[in-house]
Length: 305
Ligand code: C5P
Image (cartoon, rainbow, N blue to C red; front, side):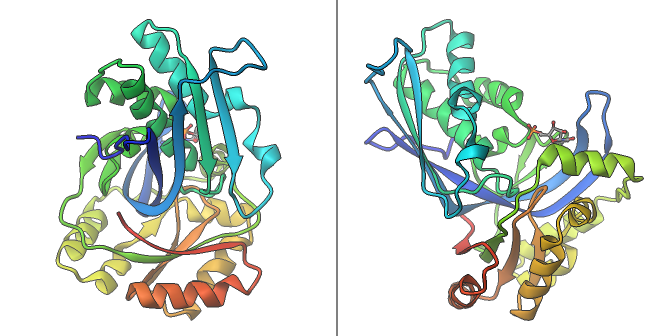
C-alpha cells in the first residue's frame, strides 16, 4: 500500500526520515554494505508537482525545476537537473514502461542534502508514484519497488513511507507497525557528509558490526510498549565513528542534544544531521527555539508520521 499519495492538485509530499537504529553488518561483493536499520518518516517535507506543460525554451519533453527552500545556499551541491533523482526516476519509469516522458516536475526542496535525512531518495520515490499516476502507467507497488531499488538503497522505504526495519542494502522492507508517535529535535550542521565517503571510511577500519539482532528487537519491543525513554538505550548508529572522524559537528551536536535533556541523541543515516528524542511535542518545540539561536545550522521540531 503506497502511502506516498498523489493529492488532488497533482502534488506529492516527500517526507524526510530518521534512523533510530543503523547497524552495518559488513561489505558485500557489489561494493555496498549489508545493514539493518529502523527508519521512521518525519514531518519535514519536500513537495513534488507535475503539470502537463512542457518547456518552451527547449524541446525537452521532460523538465524538472527545483525551487530551493533550504535555509542554506546549496545551489552548487544541488547540481545539474539531469543528475537529480526526480529526473532519473521519471526517466527510468518511462523507459521501463516503454513510453515517452512528458511534462514538468517542480520540486520544492526543504530537506537538506548530505544530511542523512533521505531527501533525494524520498524525492525519487515521490517521482515514481506521481509519474506512475499522471502518465497512466499503472505499475503495482511491487513493480515500483523494483525500480526504486535501482535508484538508491533508501528509495524503496519511501514508497511505503511508514516506520520500517530495512535490511540488505536497505531495500528489503519489513513494516514496523504499532510504534507510538515520536517527537524529535533535528539539527543539520552547516557542513554535510557524503554517504559514499562515510561508508568508505568504515571499510578502512574493521567494521565493528554487531552480529546479534537483539538490540533492534529490544528497541522495537520497547517502542511498542510506549517505553520511549527506555528504547533510547537500544538506539545506535555504527556509522557515527566514521562520520565523527570526518566532521567535528557530530560529537558537538550530540553533546548539545544531551545537555537539552533528550531521552536519546543520535546521528541519522550517514550524517551529518543529528536528532534528539524528546519527551513531548512541546519540549521538542521549546528546545528547537533555543537551539535555533545558537548558530548550529538548521533546526526543526518534528514528529514521526
Ligand atoms: O544507494 P545510495 O545511492 O544511497 O548509496 C550511496 C553510497 O553509499 C553507495 O555508493 C555506497 O558507497 C554507500 N552505501 C553502502 N551500503 C549501503 C548503502 C550505501 O556502501 N547499504
